[in-house]
Length: 51
Image (cartoon, rainbow, N blue to C red; front, side, top):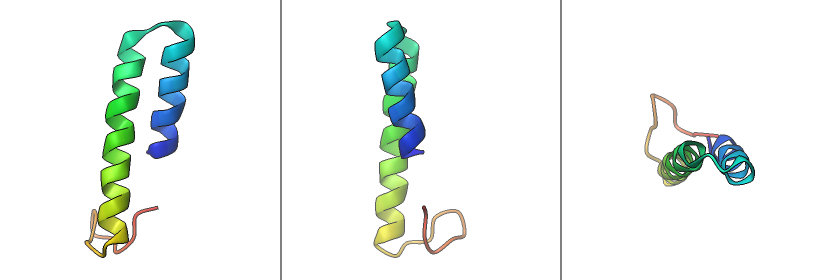
């Protein structure tokens, strides 16, 4: 999700589409939260680790 968020941010920045920029930020933040939760040992979606 983090990679997808970065890709959407880049595409949104290059094309000037603010909706892609906004979605990219949201996906990036959600991916970072899931990554941190998985790293500290909380199960995310029934998995011990979230890649």
